Length: 435
DNA sequence: TCTGGGGTCCTAGGACCC
DNA sequence: TCTGGGGTCCTAGGACCC
Image (cartoon, rainbow, N blue to C red; front, side, top):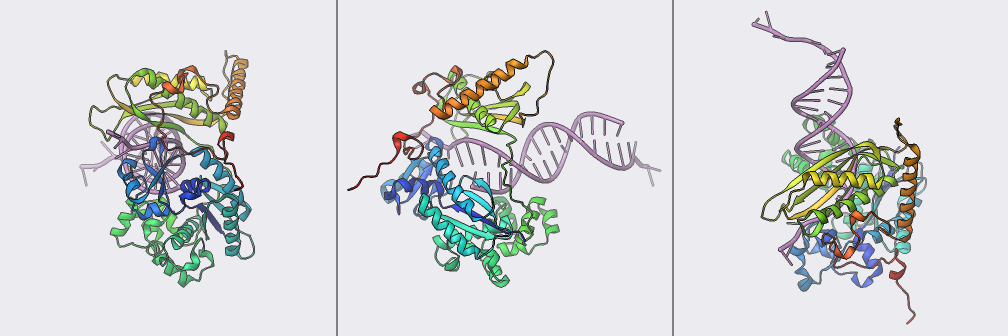
């Protein structure tokens, strides 16, 4: 029988920050998106202040004075490093791991013997001791049930009384007698199910399907007819029929994006070219990281949907004569596309580059009349640039079109509350002192 | 003043093919 | 009265995820 665990960091970004600033524990803390725009992670205390996921910072920052709310700029380099540490310990729970997001991984528990609940508590304690990150672990016979168990584990801990206390931190739905399982599912809103978003939750509730138990008891064929094959699969997963397999090898991305909001509006073509060159460069690095080549480049720019004034929103797709992962070729295509859509006089607040129609770099379409040595020289050059940038820091070697001086970048990100790179920069390493 | 970034999958409908 | 049958590919849009 299939069996899965889901290990998930609690309020992950906030927890990463708290590891290095213990004084933040018990305070309401939020981590902000790029440009310090929205709240993308909240401590339990911040959730208790009714701060919603995605709430704009400017709407909640008055809580700083009244309730001591702390807002921090996102430090993704730090979170990525903490994630690696957490994942490698979580992997000890079973033979196969799928890293599902920066703070979540599924573990395949099929065939693992012993008391899985006790084993999970040990792994949870080890992650906490070795990294400082608190986690919740859910176990179920399908990935959807493991996700649900994880939700229950975290909710039982955070809101005493919501579920039996023994479900706190680690919840094993697979070990529950059927009647107890029904009680738990009947006490959980349908919108908490993985794959049921706001829209579908609303439609289900209108039809009298309010709890997870109600959804589990629906007829899959009816669900397929009235909704979709996707929701049908969710129903079957709730019924204990495993339909979503563990993916322990990451599948290559089919598209790669790099998009950013600007710290302040940009009107002129010059800085836009810089920004788009930078985005294409970042995207090309990710592309080479998965050993793929792109066949098309999409570039877009738009004005703010929230602000008054003339609106502009356009995109252009630039086909490449041949698929490539060469930064110069991708930047050139992106800039070409940008020039084709650019119109002066608009206060643009966001732009981006998407690499589309990605194929493995090993699929090489040979052509007559091209010097293969040139191509292989170029890929050696790219590999060298990647090595240098990895070793000496992002952007150490870059194209001149992305700008030659960071300080003149009027489009650069706003990060006014950035914390140090505690585990990723020698200069920022915390020093322990004996008192 | 001020609102993130990066993905996936499915479906319906149109164009086109034999 | 009465207008085939079977298929592929592409795109736009919707919904979801973290």
